[in-house]
Image 1: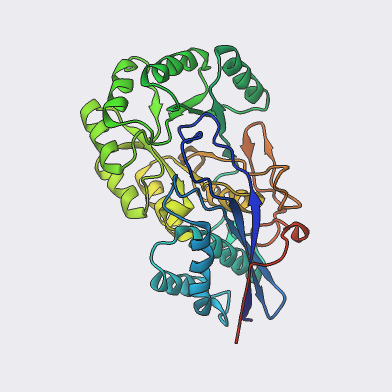
Image 2 (image 1 turned 45 degrees about the vertical axis):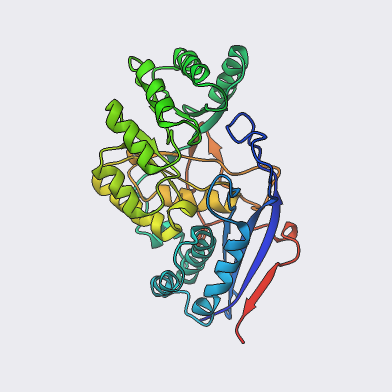
Length: 372
């Protein structure tokens, strides 16, 4: 069995930045897409992966870079036995530094294909289930008090109990008032945290944390850089959740050693791909650090992948996953379902990721890479 072809598709998407610090703040608003990777073998097996590169004003990546990164390493993949996935991934890493968005899509497809080649669900290739389900988080975008209450109630009715609350779009004193308001609305069993999308200066973050010290709110990645976040923690004595600044497993470990984080968000494209995410998860398991497992955006393909990943950790170490399934992007015919704020791999999960891709909406390929 050998890999014969890699086909790339670009599916346009519209991701809103409403009520975040990115609203109308950029003069260049690039068209965004989901890059879907299809890897085929001479035996007819197919592996699927995807990545949605973030806008370059949000993360240092371009969608075109993901496509070119995969082109660059195609010769490393083509002609190989997909069952020897570890060797292929090692060679990809040696041939391509960085480019976490390219590696996310390509590595996802390779793992899907490898599990199918062995005839097992991906979770089994990764050692089997450690947990039976994983919590899914809901994003709350702030409006008036009445709108915010309504937003919480709507999500609670769906069974959600973990909420990422967006702040940072206005003045610091407004963020302080918002957090006070939301903390009053929280129920005892709920987990809430506040995400300014790296929009606060060091002084802003310190003001917020000191003003709300009696409430002890969890703050997500308040400042632009790791160094700024470290300064905030050192000057307040309050640990935070790190997100986009975790750009490698080594950086995750540094955050633990610097005593900065209570929770880490592992974005596959930020940290360096699926393999880098798995490495950071292994460290989290050893060190007892809860993690979110996610990427910038995607569809049911990404949701299936992060769900398989989440099931390899004890439940208490999975802080939350995102539900990427949307009627606007029906790339998967049989997406995993979120029920009462939880997601679970079915007992009869099929081989690989266990999802069937709706190829009719992919359109024409943007690249077909095959053996010469």
